[in-house]
Amino acid sequence: MTLPDERYRAVQQAERLLRELCDPKRTPRIPAAIRDRARGALRHYPSTWDMLRTAEACPDIFQERMEDLHRFVAAGQQQRLTQWDPEVNQPHPTKD
Image (cartoon, rainbow, N blue to C red; front, side, top):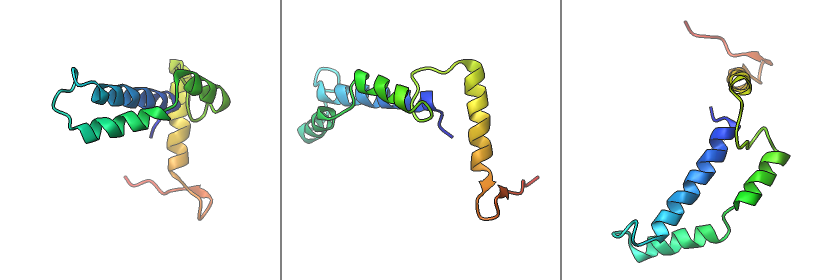
């Protein structure tokens, strides 16, 4: 189960990783082909502005931050949705 703020942070962390892969001082033993692929991925990677706009437009998918109460409620809703059985339109039976 991934919450919107976790997804947002994952995109940011992936960008940091790609940037590190491009920097031979930070990652000296990375082959040139990997650096080139990382550089290519960054060419069209979403900017901070893109991520903020996406979070505004789709807060159920991306959020920069969630308050603790909202995070708790969202986690509960996601858990209920993942336990729902659409074939019979009722919750999955729980196993004790």
